[in-house]
Every structure is written in C-alpha cells, then in structure tokens.
Image (cartoon, rainbow, N blue to C red; front, top):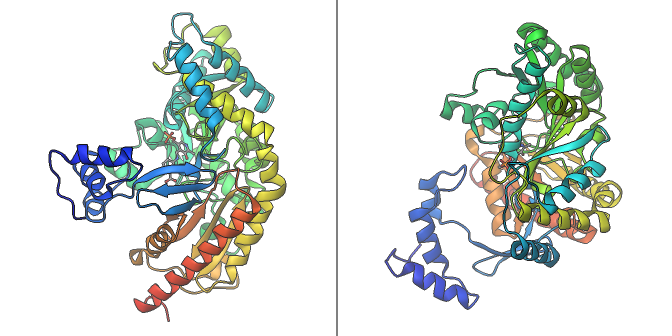
Length: 481
Ligand code: PXG
C-alpha cells in the first residue's frame, strides 16, 4: 500500500469512483483505518489491504483493479439467482417509493410480507403454513431458541430447555447462534455456549467413520443423539438442531442413513427437530429445502441468505403445524420480535427473487443438470496429486488437499494444520480469478444456482490450474516430496 491516509483521502476516493475508476490504495487505507470486518485478523488485513469488490453480473465479480473473478461462493452461500438482476432492484425501488418501512407489531401488516408468507407456505414442505421473519440467519436461530422453550412452557413441560446441536455446526454469530454452533474458536472468545445448549459429534464420515461403511456410520452418528438425550434426561431436552449439509463446517454431507434415523430418535423422545436451512434452503441441494433431500420432517426451519439471494438482508423461521398451533391457540403474546420483522423492502426483494428461481427452474436445474455436472467435474479433480477426496451435493462441493493420497478417504495423510495449505490455495484462487473458501485444508464451492454448465467447466479448469500452483508452492516449501 502506498497511499497515505490524509483528510482528503475520502474525497479522492469518491472523486475517482464517480468516473468508474477506483483509487484502490486510498480505499484500502480508509478500510484499514475505520472498518472492522467480520471474522478478520485486522493486523494481517492492514498489511495486505482489503480487496475491493465493485460490481457483479451473473456468476462474475469485478474488483477495483478491473479483475474479473468467477464467484464460486455465491457471495457467502447466498446469491442464488446470480448478480445483476435488474428486476430485483426494480422491485425494491418500487417498494421503497410505495412504503419503505412499516412495522408488523401492533396489529399491522404490509403487502409484501403477507404475500411472501403465503408463497413460502406453498414452497415449503406441507407441515409449514406459518413464518416468522427476521433479518438474518443468526436472528432466525435466536428466534428458534426462544420459540422452542416457549412451546414446551405452553405444553406444561417448562423443564424441557436443552437444545442439542453438533460440533463443527454453524448457526450464526449472536449469543444464541454462536452457542448453537459447534465452533470451538467462537466459544473460546465469548464465554459460550450459553446455558442449556449441548453438542454431539458431527456425521463426518472422512473424519470419524474409519472401519465402517458409510451407511453404518450414518446410524452410529445418529445414535450419538440418543446417547446425549439419555445423558441429559429425555424430559429435559427441547430440540435437536442440524444443517442438512454442514456448510461453513466444510460441506460435510451426511450418509443417507443419518437424517431418517435422527428423525426416528426425535419422534421416539418427542423432541422437536430443527433444520437450519440458511445455506441449504432455496435450492442449494437441488430441492427447495435440504430436509426434503435428507428425508427428514422437521418442526422448524431456519432460513435466510437465498430467500433474497442476499440482495437485501432477510431471514426467518418456518413454523410447522405442531409449534404454530400451540403458539397461536394457547400462547397469547409471544414476547419476541424485531423492528425489521417482515420489512416490506426485504420481502419485496424476496418475492422477485423467488419468482426468478421458479420461472427459470433453477432448483430443478441444480437437481438435473448443474448439480450432476459439478459432481462429475469435482470427481475428476481427484486425479490431481494434491486432492485426496471430493464430495458434492447439489451445488455445494468440497475437496481435501492432502499430503499423501490413499485408497480410501481414511487412508489419506493430511498436512499438519500449521502448514495452512488451504489458505495458500485460496490465495492462488483469488489471484487467478476464482473464489473458493478454505475450511482448513478442505476447499469448498457453492456457486450461484444460475451457473451454466460452461461456467462450471471454466471454474473447475481455474481450480485445477490453482491446484497446480499450490502443488508447486508446497513442494518449494518442502511440505511434500
Ligand atoms: N445458519 C447457517 C447454517 C449459516 O450458514 C447462519 C445460520 C447465520 O446467518 P447470518 O445471516 O446471521 O450470518 C449461517 C451463516 C462461512 C460463513 O464462512 C457462513 C455463514 C456466515 C458467515 C460465514 O462459510 N453462514
């Protein structure tokens, strides 16, 4: 970085920006001086300078230096319809002119919120006829914690407080969201989890399934839920929460036997089942909701991200008939809600976004065309010397960078974590025009659902090239022979 931070820096950045050129160095200086980013080591960021993203169209982004990048992560698992959808911008513009905001407290409602609630009831599995709106996935999960406890209170079992979640789950960054999540690094920094939340191991076959068939492992992993219920006491457990496929945890795809068995165990102990669909919802796995693919019948669904393709923040909870009936018929006031619950502009964006997903049959395309194509192309990357194994579900995929390949997923030798090979690889990807996320040494993609077969080929070719660069770099550093 060369530019000095001066009083006129903002003015310079602004003046240049109006000409559609960007003073990257000045923006980076201001960024480092004033902007605290989520999940970021700011000392390290200051050294490098933030990459400034300025434009998007389809599956592509452009940075302030004019570089074109294929966005393998759909923003952050959310831009399902792709960038540059003028009709969403127009719907938002029209709604802002008509009614930019009104609350849904005090016996009032607004047109987009009503229409969206009704549309979601037609898209979701049939037990879902009601929705509670929030602004984010974290707030959706906070709402779920409050709602399940209120439910059991109304059922005359207020001692049912405990929610069981899983290690390496991600459910958000608020106090309840981070507590439900199973990320040790988050717990360590916040004195979390809050009381009444406990965790079991994740259904990660590569990590924990040594010596077992996948199907057998799925049943074993589900049995950990029953063990935990018995340990806590069945009369104290309120709910189990899980992502159909763990996203931020590294695209961990459970064996097909896992979710039906989880469902059976929840029914056996009369425990509410919660599906966190913040990533899997709205087509990511080739079904509208991930629980449909996993053959589970949840009582509650958390959603966010893909409902608006991220154009405007919106999240919520789909409330199944069991909980909705109790809240409505027996509950009186549920003392919970947000200023922006049912925000008319966010709901207008969602309505237009969902219209696009439906009209362009993007969910069906994931199931029948783009998902299978990504699966085949990702499987082809296993021939690369650095790739131990690769797994795909719909348009979410992950591959493991390994020190030594093996005949099965359990025979591969990982790099020592301190080698940070995943981060190295991620750097090559970004520098060469493709965004992949690194979860340790697992490299993952979740592109917009609008991606074409040709764009998948382009993305995978870029990934292969960057894997070559990573291989050269790890050899140079003596991390591999
Ligand atoms: N549940 C799941 C399953 C998520 O993936 C949230 C809840 C929280 O949503 P909000 O809107 O509050 O962020 C998420 C969010 C990553 C990454 O690095 C993933 C998320 C957020 C930030 C980073 O993969 N998912």
